[in-house]
Length: 516
Image (tube, rainbow, N blue to C red):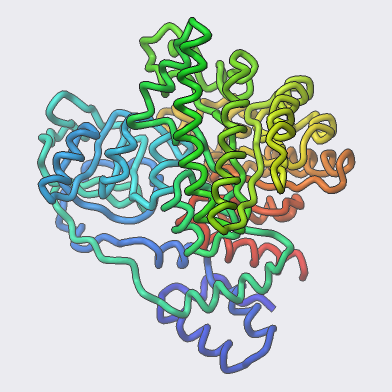
């Protein structure tokens, strides 16, 4: 049934393919059209492309972290991006690496370049979520006070710079940027892909704000599989979360929690309203402490913060945190219901390693739900991102309404790779020597990680037959990974909003292969 995936390479090919299928007017023709279009073409059609880059000086090539082209003046801080925006200038944010404190500038930047990081780094994940072109892990990049040096070439702040997030190339000078192509036939094709999927495997989005949720919905998302609450505590909320984390006096901690709860309620209500009546899975706080406190804080200066006091571990140490977030979610659901909408939400507990800690903290969440007595109580599940949780999935399932695999962290821990470092210094050598077939942060590892997801899914459902299973790591937007995940029996994938159309097509193609 399936056509050759390399036969459709350009928008005109897509137009002809869809026209032929419309003329044939049967399901087989529509399914063949769905099978014939490479997801890479769909991704290319959704993003801006570079024009006139051939005459620019190539400064270097890094990890192609978020597709699309961008050009603007070089800005070395988020504040410089804000200043450029005030002047009406396009800006490219260039940093050693980004942190949540940079996000106000990242959102306004036309593009992002970092010296450190890989596909699962902060810069890469945030940029893909917002559709901002990004190149990370540019090893020849050195950032100084008022300039950057790339490949030995000095670029002063305010000078023009360009990047191609699809190829990973960074250029000196200003390049032309072509807008994304308008191809109505793509919407027709994706509608057929949705027919193939039916209710077998869903496609949701990772979104943390109301505008992200609206964008994801416009791209065809069927809900939010990952709403990261830590992204709601940035900007002008950062001093409050710091006050909570550093509080010694119980009254000061309670006051900070009350203030955080008020803004959390408002932000969650906006996301729920934008997505209602589709489901929203809210992950309770799961950020390394140094992202809020900085490396120079006694609490933030952990030797390995990605494996430190984050996720459910922070909740165990500070019982009031997840209780507050649950109350805020319940209040937000009530607010949205009062406005006339019908919210659906679920609570996700992250970075779990033992069934005992899951049972304990889930009990706190259920206590808050029982006290509020909502019309439709949210389900409470967990994120499977540690190998121990995956191997003990049967035990975990007894205390969870759903699983959501966090494949970024699961990959990091299975390999023992630091996801923020390995792509910059090690991955290129491993790939060139054939020590790895692919970057496992880009394509799900078929040797261990994918079988681990499949085995945990089976074990979880043996213990809990109605267990819903999703994937919210960035692999949920990668076509090759999606084929492995669909074969593993998951119920939905969740990915960045701009990858939702690609995921809709890739899931349909995976199902077609399973059916043949």
